[in-house]
Amino acid sequence: MEQSLLLTLFSILIAVLGSTRIQFVATHQESGDWHCEVDEESRVSAEFKPGVVTLDGHGDDWENIDGFEFSLLPALDPDHDHEYKQGKMTVKALHDGKDVYFLLQVDGEYVYKKGNDKNCPSVALMFQVGESATYHSMGGCKQSPDACNKKTCRGHEVDIMHFSIGNAIPGRLYGGNPVDNRDGNGGDRFGHLVDLYAWSPHCLNLDGVSPKGNDTSAQNDWRGAWWHSSFTTHSGYSEEDSPYSTKGQKGTFYFEFSRPLRTMDRLQQDVQFTIGQMSKFSAAFWYPEDGNAWHGSGHYTISCDWVPLDVPPGSSVGAKVVSRSSWDAISGGFAFLLSIVSFGVTIFIGYWVHKKDVTSFQRIGG
Ligand SMILES: *[C@@H]1O[C@H](CO)[C@@H](O)[C@H](O)[C@H]1NC(C)=O
Image (tube, rainbow, N blue to C red; front, side, top):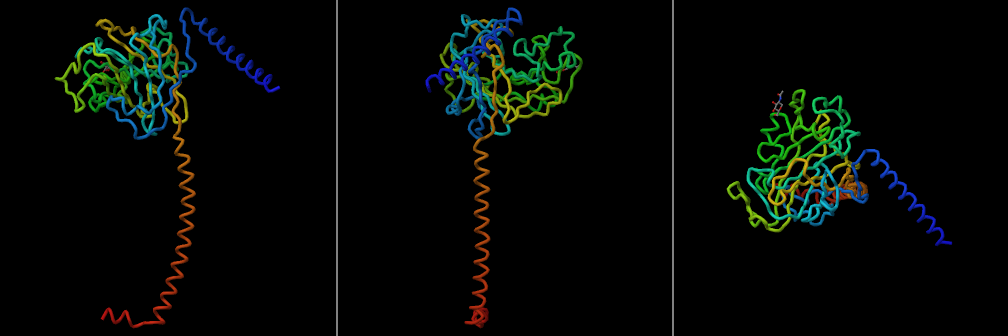
């Protein structure tokens, strides 16, 4: 009896899973030769963990945070035969109620050429902003480069953070800074950790910059730092220490970022995170293979479609509020009881002093 019930449930489950898979394949057949097989398990959760990580590029303070490990496949042809060979990318995220933090961790032999971004590893994050923005084709607006604008591509906006480390000293903070933010765009002239938006790969601009003129209300809202596990100095690098480690050293690259959950964007160029809601994102990685400079489109990504990113509320907050309010009730009760007791004691002492030795105070005072 029980067994047959289980079997029935199991077959219903199989049927449901089967039908979603068929649907999935069908939608991708419609979109031509683009082939994408998503790992439906993949999902990143930015748990509420305030005061755990420092934005310094180091990964050790993330050790107890759960991450998700992704294969890195070529973005334009997500084929396992052409996977990034040196390892996977681990993505970790958390939030502290004000900012959201990301750690991208990739195994890779050390390679760095100062001043030359394309001969150094590089990473990017991309988020869905407009409801119609697809992962494939960076928003998927079909307009030509001279026809894409905020009206013709409305709803296809994606938000992009790109960090190219050729001028970024490891462990130092880059991204939004007063000099570039005064100009009102998403640039970063110091470390090239830039805040961009796009409707498609050929309609990609810094926040605030557009083909039809600039809007100087934009900002670079990202901050970040990078590190490699082969580095031995922990007291702080400066530019003269470049290339910071020796070429070909085995190890792990770390890229750490943060951004406020909400920004002052008024142009539909920034993703806005809401506690308790899901966002959609992806992460990309460029690596100068065999010492060759990479190309903009020659990157690996963690998935061939959006990856869900949860920003859950702090579960401990609810519990604390409850316990605090009950403690308030208890301590309130105590205060009332104490005030009655002390009132009684006051009356008694007053009576006792009055009756027993009225003049003793006068004697001490005199
Ligand atoms: C817009 O900003 C970009 C980047 O700062 C700059 O290169 C461009 O000249 C500006 N365009 C206009 C029309 O001001």
